[in-house]
Length: 340
Ligand code: SF4
Ligand code: SF4
Image 1 (tube, helix red, strand yellow):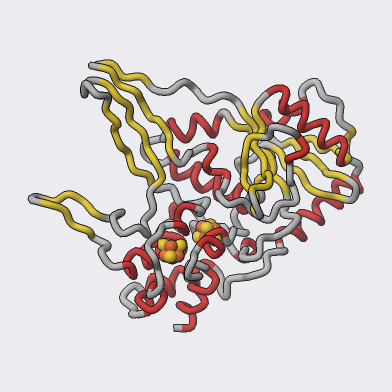
Image 2 (cartoon, helix red, strand yellow):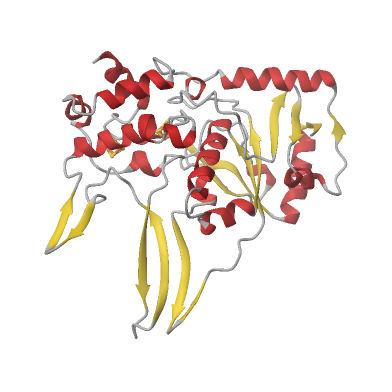
């Protein structure tokens, strides 16, 4: 493991040199918010962002992704992804990426996701300005950070850059950086710890108490009350870094001999998500919005805990900000369930 100190100008020079070698995706301004996008100029970089509209999972698991092309009896997969860098992912998003890594490696390894993951070198960044709806300090904190290749931490006058993996070490190939002093390393550790505690909201209890209470509330009438204003829009799913459902579709050419297969994000809160074919028609096994709302909360707080070793929520707060009627905030929902 190596640690370097970069001044603000030094960081710009470092990022510029990365951009000469490969695409660098990082937080940039979009209207009044931020998004992860391919940097065109280093000046666009906004490492002081609060959160992004969509999480960085879109780089590994894009909203629409071609899986294969077919022509007659022949099929071919898309070309291997280009190497790129994801710069500036906050720790809660790194935890979410570790979770999706596990889920896409489980059972049948998903080469479409894992190919993008392998091609990407991830540089994390401590939170400088917590998002107004976030609660990351009180959830999934027992889960050790992993899966990233390097970490940047803001310190006085610059940044400490820690290179963690072999992929991370390659980021500085051909670049001379000044080693961080013990004082700068100590300052970075203290700043990192402080930023991990900076979320404005917190959950009322620990993960296992929440898991037990939520599971025990399955038959409660509370789900109807909580979901009364739900528009079934699916926004809470779409912005979530740990949601990973998708739908696979084929698109045929005019002669019905060739075409392509792609997948696109799906959302369990939408009314048709649970419709399946049955003999003579179809059936929707989560017809009512309270069943869909309950399913999302169960997935996040109870169902996936054993598989992931933590709740399938990292406290980013994106769902709370994206929900028009204001009912998707896990902190408010869990508080209400715990009090019931
Ligand atoms: S459920 Fe909400 S707060 Fe939790 S990870 Fe998903 S979007 Fe973030
Ligand atoms: S909880 Fe909110 S964001 Fe989620 S589907 Fe319902 S209205 Fe949309």
